[in-house]
Image (cartoon, rainbow, N blue to C red; front, side, top):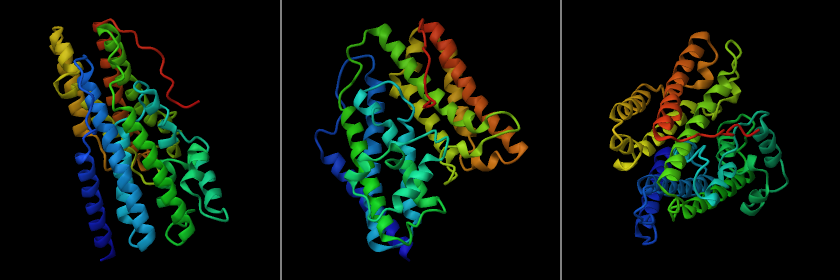
Length: 343
């Protein structure tokens, strides 16, 4: 019964957030005649969706802490927020104000369980942390990974400790503010000054950077054959790594098509329909066959599981070859080094 009450409240809060968003006359993407308009509108929509979902997460966490109801709906809302974040994760192109928030939204890779150590220390403090306190803390306790720790880690006392719950609401409020900043940064098109050649280079780099980041999320835990590092998996505590990756691929697929104004249309205009078909088919096959309900953490515990996970990685490798190599050559674009591993 308690879960139903909280789930109903989540639905109401989401509906209210949607109403507030739609009634805001400024909540529309900038209209330009630039070649990037289709891609920009996809990015704008992703940023708005993330901000709205983060607001819902903040509200749901506050409601949970006030009512002490079932926590499953909070977990679901957190996961939906992570999925929204996947659309922007790993990008190195766009408004500087938006890119500057990336580490605040999610600290990954977490090579030394820094999140676990910092969060354990945070909840042992004499009093709960305010949003202002959180904003001054390490990025490891500011973002979505810290909420995952509170919801799933055995070291968390979120369910039993009102002070920890208060800190959790401060963290979700901080996420809400930071994602609102991202949405605001995307209120104007950052690419309108680019000529055709520079835009094509920027666009391919945008897709390549995000794809390479997604691949890093698999290659790190896959590591060397026979010696996987499952704790390097993103969202290993909630075992939602593969769901996140599917959302990554779907986001890149949306950017590729960009509502008929993206790379697919560009390639066809240049007489490269065969290449466009191969990329479109690779995206479709990858999404359709992706084992989203399985846990990468669990898969890496066995040899067959490892091999199956690696076969998924190969799908991303093929996408990288098509975009990073074939498209770049056809368009005469040089793709530079991408520093995605946080070293």
